[in-house]
Image 1 (tube, chains in turn green, cyan):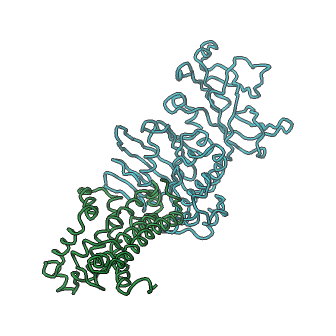
Image 2 (image 1 turned 120 degrees about the vertical axis):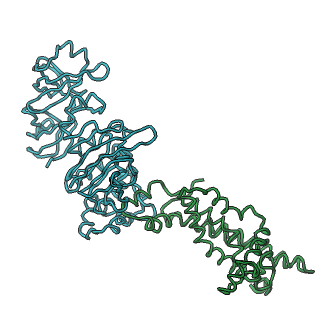
Length: 236
Length: 361
């Protein structure tokens, strides 16, 4: 395989995978909570929360990168506080790429989990209540297992989307080889450099394969999970 | 063990204002047309609906009291409920469904008890199955077992048979009969089917438009002219008879009933067994003299006790047959022609008898 990709390309690929997997895993608990809030509760300002959750889908990624920079930069109050008290620095670090990717793909996770929670068969909650399960118990024994297909679908879709993140990352954490240069940034760099066309083409082909593979995998895993949780295939 | 219910609840322009009680062992039917508020009452007892006002006590514990602001949440009530649509958990197999409530119970059922509930409902071979591979009748049985294994202090059945076709119903009714005969807790059975009620219930509370219009033993309530012709829409009288003998040559059984005899198609029960029968008011003809040369086998001497104009062209007639009461529904025109008055002796020709098939304790 080393024959096909150069060391720099491998570096970009490995970094992309690391950033995407950590971003998805860190976003998941928040996404599940947000989906639960939106699917199962009624409260004032729900439309606002719904809008905020979806904001990353419609805002230009560059704008999000800029907002992250002004809030998490080491001279910004929040960024300075995090750096001075915990030693956590996001700017110019791969952890910043994780933060940006998690934020941008958050809506994908929330939407898939919310859909799964909302499609839970009616009345199961009441049945579990009458059988002695309290709210937390029902979450773990009923809602969470039945939402597994949606959780998996959301995770894989968000992972695939993370691999494609560009604008927010380059704005927030710059384009540092081995640190923040993920595949899209590597493609951009290759296009900018003389003689980089072949590298750009290879990395683009890789991106297409990864995105497509991710979506197919999501579909397959979600179907398997629906069968495992006794819910049968989704009717379309 | 007993339960006392008194509640008021508004839902849109429908007002429920009902008070009644049920006690165990035995089955109390909550009977009434769709939309009468039966399910709302059941949900309120289980704690799934919070009524506007009232009080609910089960087995001495107050589960709801609007004046004292008591509302025990559903998961702490220990009231079993079986829904019309079973509501099995799709991600758990039959065994895990059965044990869902048991695991969460304060006093868990022992292995013997679990095994005997599984045997009572005939679920031994289904334990590893997923709910979506079960038939409708099997699903109801699992839902019933799941509710029993939480060891409830009262059991609520919300039309558990209404989603099933006739064949599935007759397949599962015997399980409910066994449950009634073996269970010691009070069972409230919601239904709009008089067939099921006549087979299973000992007592009946009739709900109409949000109010309890009658409450009492099945025999008394079904022989009450106010209810038969009135809002309750009862089809006929439920009676108790004993098997006097069998006529093997004609495949018939002979029932002793109010000092008279009644012939029905052969029953697989020994002589002396007591059984429940239902005679629909429409299936009783009246004759002033003992009719001769007719095909009906059952002609009983009776006396008119009371007459009541019913719906439309009909008149309901309460008859005494020995110490039993029976209601006949004839046209007003016939009643006038026969000149029926209370105290008149005549003959009741019974065209059809529904046999409930239970042995009362």
